[in-house]
Length: 104
Image 1 (tube, helix red, strand yellow):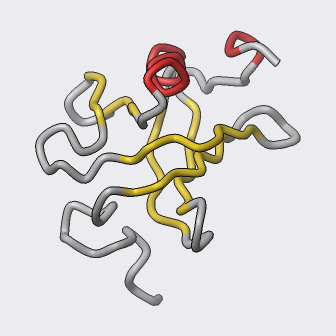
Image 2 (cartoon, one colour; image 1 turned 90 degrees about the horizontal axis):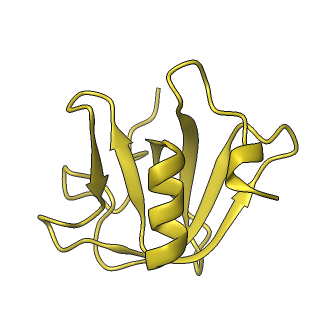
């Protein structure tokens, strides 16, 4: 598989679910573009595309809560990614371990 074979949406983005490699807890979901996928694979730490700021962001750059990449998987339709990581702190900007801390 090549990054160029992934199915990015019309904005050039692909969703990425981030999961703790040890506990298997789902930590967060963020968007990636081709450049952030490459950076994540090259640097073995997660990079994403901020739709609100229209720029790349390195997870944990300001908070220190980085995510060491263990494996980057893609789904059967090649339109969604799963990043298995070792987190160095909470994933959520609220300080919660996961962004999925509320029930509907």
